[in-house]
Image (tube, rainbow, N blue to C red; front, side, top):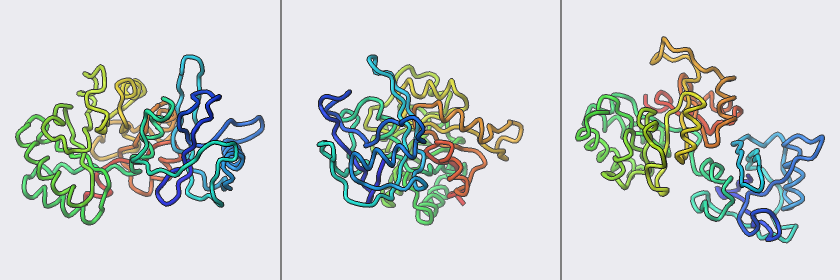
Length: 308
């Protein structure tokens, strides 16, 4: 993916090709003897005339998909460094679009996780437990919003997980604060929360709730996240149409002192097999973001890096 001024380069597939007529992210096949990065530099130059730098390419996500008549593996990388002006050198129309304007129906089905990755931030902010302290919690949230300005927040309040009235009151106040600070708010708990707060960006399901779902429990216009701990749970998240997963814990953390962390190697293996954007959580800070990205993750999720 090539990003310039907040927009991503999009091409329309030629009619005679597989999935012809649909939109795509420019790229191509890896030839024998090439690395993925070398192939991207060559293909982008051939298709669009843009010149990329191998070292500036960053991993985004790997997607395996079976169309029935064809199986594909999309190894997706991104860069915001591309010299020249793009044009369709093979006769294909091209354009620069904002990520929020990308629609699943305009792309081949395998591209859905790629679109989600473009539309999600690299850091997912979770509220601390003390957000449940009513008025003081909302003041803490307001301060954190003003200082850190996270684009996407999960309103996690374990103390009120079984107290719907209290959580809904908190959600109403938090939504107002997030809207005034240009942040999106995800609810945390059961899918039915969206019926009470349709102005929220979506809902994040703890595994105990996600495991009860056999299909996507909220409309496509909302974001759906799921907390996962292993490959089976990640596969379930994909099966019910989640937009992202949180996976951990990656490193040792004081909140789970008796549980062994995944470690970066196991985390990387789980992420590489997942067909959706994955955030790492547990013992991570913004300094770990490059490592998480190298593992193929969307980024990191947590409390400490912004709720201080």
